[in-house]
Amino acid sequence: MKLTRIEDQSEIGAAYRSVFSLVTRGTNPQKAVVGYHSGNVSCRVAWNSQYGLWVMYTPKDWDNHLLVFGTQNPRTHRHGSLNITCQINVSESSWGRQRAGAVLSNGTTTYLAHNGGIAGGKEGVGKAAFLSWYRDHISDTVDVADAKDNLTPYIVIGKIAQPATFPTCSGEIHFCCRTFQEGIGCQRDCRSASQAGRRTRRQ
Image (cartoon, rainbow, N blue to C red; front, side, top):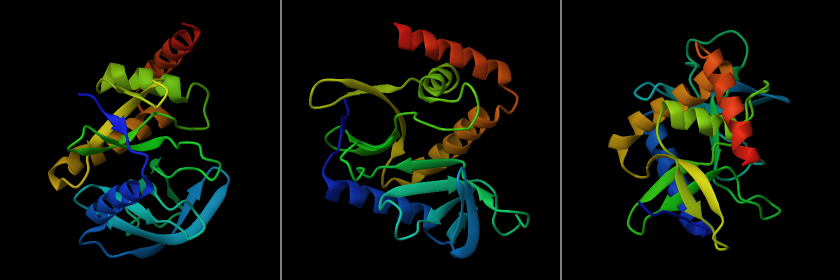
């Protein structure tokens, strides 16, 4: 399957709204405090019990097309702030650089994707290590060429605007990121992936 990255901001915006609408459909937004590496933010989140995750209504001064997910049920999580499990930013940065998230297309269908760039605050948690771990445990990645024919590997999360595909991709979001970042039952796998990632960079 040959995929290209969509660069048109109106198309990206439409794809973002489609995913956000799908995840928040039938939910009731509620106030919450969400924590991240440098602090926390008071905001609204929507808990989707079908998919087992919440999505943030991002503050107005944050990126426009940022999807922020977590797996703690805000209705029952009473101690401290909610933790972010995964964020997928399909916005273009203010200085024109591409974010880790992406909207890809094969000409007829659009897909939500991510290049594997993560930050977990632990040794061995990084893009190369995560992609190596993902290929070993989940699925192959897809190489996408830019305008200069430079290839970037992407994790294809799921088709956009097809509700039947999202339960799978939502499970993939929190299984992959939480398992890899927190090392739940796979500390040895994380170290192996980190070593494989370093070998990949040297080649």
